[in-house]
Image (tube, rainbow, N blue to C red; front, side):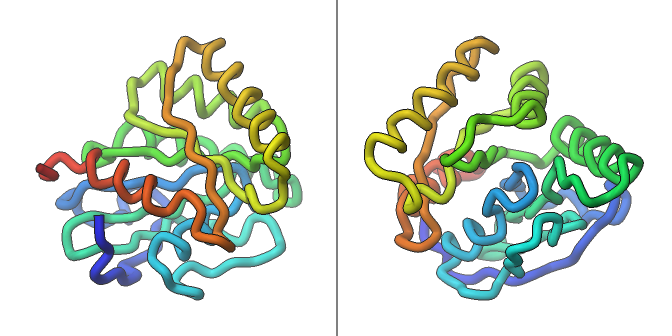
Amino acid sequence: MNIRGISFVKSAESMDQMPDEKFPEIAFVGRSNVGKSALLNMLARRNALARISSKPGKTQTFNFYCVNEEIYFVDIPGYGYAKVSKKKRAQWQKRIGAYLTGRTTLSLVLHLIDSRHPPTSLDKEIMLLLCENQVQSLLVLTKADKLSGNGITRSIQRVRKDLTAYGMELPIIVTSALGYTGRNELLERIFNAIPTAS
């Protein structure tokens, strides 16, 4: 897949504020500060398409980007951010679950997990949600530039063990936004997931 053009469309706080369901959607989901915005920028080869912050919880809305006038990339609010109220966290998680299970044009979920750390309990909840609702997804390990080769291998093994516990066999793609690691494989997977792709 070649990204010829990408532009920001709109932000939405709830399902009824989202764009019409006219394009297939590729969702980027993961805990706060996992690197969703950085990965989106890396795929687009743009430094500031999605705003990046060292502070978790920067993305607080569903942000829609139109790619090649034919698909949407959707940057989803990070879950598990500790410095907001429990009520706010619960609202975010409810909205994320509603989107992942109720958006008819959702074609693929990129579930991002920080390669340096084991999956959190919320990561595992997302795995289970995707599995139970048969949502097409793949697992993306981020920030691989911060690990050695052995560290990456251990990270893959950790995640695969959790997936196996839920009876899931998903592609696991190792990425680094700094070195464009995994970019071509991710774009190929995205292209293959688009219903109109041939």
